[in-house]
Image (cartoon, rainbow, N blue to C red):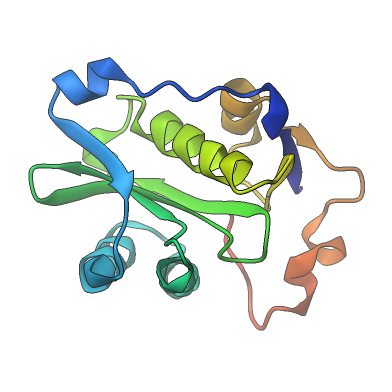
Length: 162
């Protein structure tokens, strides 16, 4: 079920705790493409679909992909304006780094970017964990937002959740 977020009620404040722990959350660069696509392909069942969305996000101006890194290692990513304009996702964090709130940080910085680009609302397409998005972004389900009624109805093959 697609969800919607009111961006006007969100205020992003970077996590000092993550920074102090040595994590950097930043906008990706197109030169990061190979490393990002390799990371996504290795770690997530979204596989080729998520890689295609990341590639699209990297070619937007500015790139609509954020990375969480520790040293020179990618540990998480989030994209927006990849599936379609005003859509958030996909989002993924390396299983070894889950539970540290990197996903929350990536979600919030991405939604703030959408807000700064002039959007009032964001769509989260077919999320795998609706409770996560409700808790951390105030997302609510869109009536009639099932995949067969959404942008995904025209995709070839089966799309995986964000």
